[in-house]
Image 1 (cartoon, rainbow, N blue to C red):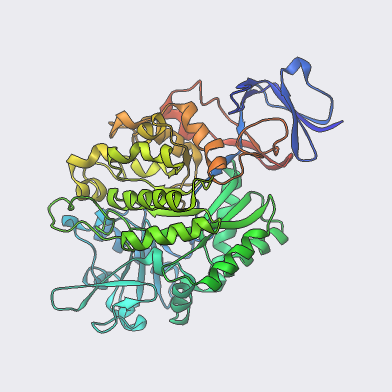
Image 2: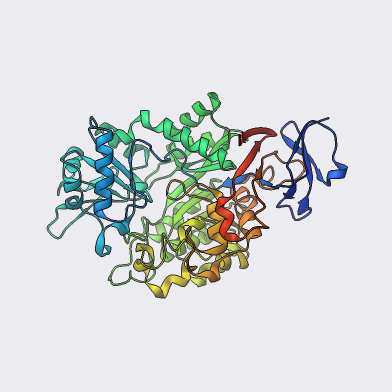
Length: 538
């Protein structure tokens, strides 16, 4: 007898062989049958879905659950001016009078007037002499005040740092703005350096609570598989601890960070880690960066930034990156490569092409992660080279990146048509893998789905680049089977198919029957992982 039957449901299977069903059965954590309600087999437990929509559990292909959001920080999301930043810091100081550091997250670049990047002089009047550490909303930059520069040892002779690169002014003095934080500051060495310098945010005691909060959020939102995209081998112990303590209710795939200069001994350790694991927790893919981000002009563009003479830089010369990717490909690794600018993306595609020419084609499923500004000439290359487009729909929302915001202004109107070309990639045959990029954006898959099908802000308003919307069925597939395929787990998750793991979500409303503007209101009422209820609304 089956352990569980879900009946009286509108099941959207994401399986083209049987797109719709009314019931499914589960035994020993796997789906044994999918079909009509009248034909359902007996089971020890029956869940009546009440006619609700049932989907495969969401597979979030790029979700920084380990980094997460830190409740001990000043939250700056939505703070649109220095005055508002000051008000939030002041309120936090009142609630935390004994704090030795002021730590903030979620800073939005557009809060600084005039389109420039922030400086220590902007932060000093708001922080009463305490060292202050502010993370950009994308966690790619760090903004510090004068007191923090003293604590961290940042001066004109020390700007190339273990945790980033300190920007300098025309006289060579550091401004208080630090780039390359995601590349350096989130690395093993960067985290150690910050912790040794006394930054509380980087301490071991703050990391585990951040992870637990993110894991709890993920399961509430119906995310049954999480791809954590940037970890050192040291970080895997945090996930093992969560599993041992019963807090790992979503499955996790942990990508291992491969910074420039990673040696053969470390690669051997990565390969050994990838040989372990199971359906609940495994490591293996390698995370690399080819460029940074558009807003502070550190992504690599084919043409200069709007109003500037420079076009950003790649972290590797193209020839070096091509040889590196060929080496990793030959060793059997899958690469997740952060690339946002059109030149950065082209550099990655050229490297994959070089690897295929050198090693021969294989089912590598290398990913370009973000794909924010893509030249039309490179759209068909994704399908031709078997490269997955791992994208975060919420990032292209007009209230984050559109006209009047730093992303759109940095590239200029002439390149807006290149912004997050989801439909073009899909129509060209590329595999789309959708994700949230939490905590850069909201974790909720409903927000991602809404943005993918509307390209509108959460408050509505006009769509931005509406010709690159996708239909809801395509968006759901990208958030389930597409992301499962991207991570070599489509054989056992991503669709509700007999033989696959019983990971599914029962939603409060049918996404296919309501207006698109109501999608963000939809909740995951019941979340089932491996045939067991992992979350249920009271």
